[in-house]
Length: 336
Image (cartoon, rainbow, N blue to C red; front, side, top):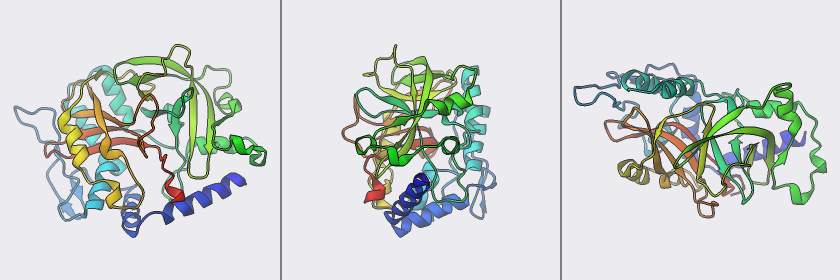
């Protein structure tokens, strides 16, 4: 019962900290979640297909998701959080017009099926954050307040055990509490899933251990711990996947500059954001315009309010489209 009361309070605070503009923008995004609009149709207008190919450009995509009469905030939300139908059509174009390896074809295909109804470690990609000197894990976040948002698989799993929140000591409240029985109930008689984790330089493999939850006054998330016996925690560990993803480790200054100079959420609501500080670190092999980016400081984040991980697409029109995007609020926006 405490958990549900906490969620209601958390939701109220979250929405109260946002301005009217962001409320309207978020509402538009939520209402479009089930949008079946074709890839080249936005609003009431029909445009040509987004894939523009010529003899010199065989793996580029043209942006047709943003109309010039949209406000800055509407543009920001449509670029960072495209509807599922639009995102899937971008991914279909990527599969069609790029020379992807078999590994990357599998990854992009499964990226179309990313869903909060699955455990986050069963999705095609998930963020990894280091919360303190000794703790690092895969993070998953609850959904609040929107009837179109599915209850996350982690939330449902937590409902299956009887946790007495009144027994949580004050000194334990801001720390992740792990419950081995959660994943034991899912993988009964089987090994817990192996994952690949990606740094800014290489790919390695490890195995999920336990699932826990952090409850704090201004933030909440689920965390999957994993085997760190052979892991150097000083490495820049950024994201994970069940798939072997083939990457070209490189920086793209053009993409970095476009991200830095795009409209930031602070223009649209009162809470700070660090998304404009994202940097590229790898390109998806077989493409020329799909990059993995992150905003964070290492070995521990002591500067950014919202460290993040994302996969972005650079269009012909020098627009950055976010195909996947996760961040953690360390500022505590609900308490603003």
